[in-house]
Length: 347
Image (cartoon, rainbow, N blue to C red; front, side, top):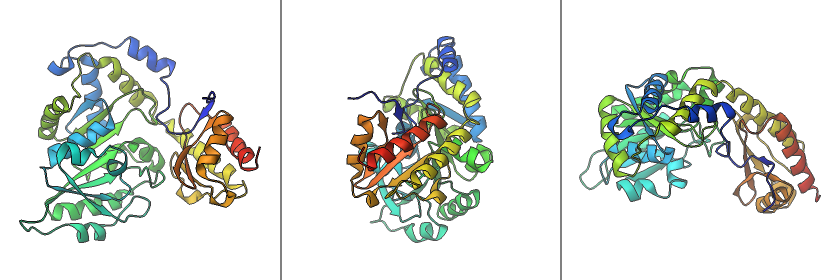
C-alpha cells in the first residue's frame, strides 16, 4: 500500500504528541481493579467534574461505554429509542442485541437530530406483549449527520418527553468536546438534561486509547461490574489514563482549529467541478463530499487519492467523508483538496 501522507479517513488516526507521550511515560500507576491507580482515579474525577456527573469510570473504548450504559439502564427485551443513523446501530457490531438483548426503535431525524414529537410518537404505552421503552439515546455530535451539534434546547426538550414516560436519557458524547467548542458552552450545559454520558479520548482529543462513562454514583457502581464482565478490567491503567488526562488538559480548545480546517476543506472542494458540498452542514470537524457529479464512484476516487498518498473515507457509492484532526494542519487539508481535484480531473 502506498505511504499515506495525509490521512483524513477519521479523527481516530492521530498519534500521541510528544507532550502526551511524556505524560504516559511519567504516569503513576497502581491496581485499577482495587481503585488504587492514582492516574486513573484523577482522570475519572476530572472527567466527572467536567461532564457534570457524580462519578465516572475509565474504559478501553467508546463502544464499551455504550454497551455498559445500555446494560445498566436496560433489561433484555427493553427498547432504546434513537436516531436511524446512530453509531450503536451501524458501527458496534450489533452489540446492543448481542451483549444486552436490547431492541432498537429508530427515528427519522434530520442529520441525526430528532424532535420531541418524534420521541412522543415512538414511546410505547405499556402492554405486556410489547417491549418496554426504557432509554432515549442522543448522539452529540452526530457522526453520520455530519458532525451537527444538538442545541441545548433540543436536548432538554427530547429528554423531557423521555422523562414523562419514565425513561432514562443516555448521551453518546464521542465528540462532545467538538460540540462544546463549536457552541462556546461548557460540557455541563450539554449534559445537564441527560442521565449518563461518555466521552472518547481517541478522536479529536488525540489520545491513543480510552473513553470515560459518567453518571450517578449508583449507576457507575453497577457499571464497574459490567466493565469486568465485558472484559474491560485493567490493572495499571494509568499508563493509558495519562493520555486521557493530557487530552482533557491540553487538547480541547485546539479543536477550533479542526473546525476551521474542515470549513476550509469544504470551501476548497466546493470549487471542484462535479463535487457537492453543503457548507451549512459543516459545524465541527466532519465533511461529507458528494462525488456523484464527477461521473466516478467514491471508491474510484478513494483509490486514486490513496495512490497519491491521501486518504479520505468512502461512505456510500458516491459519498465520501473527511475528518480534520490535530495531525492534519491547514496546509495538509489544502493539499488534500488539490489532490482530489487532480484525481477528479483524471490526473
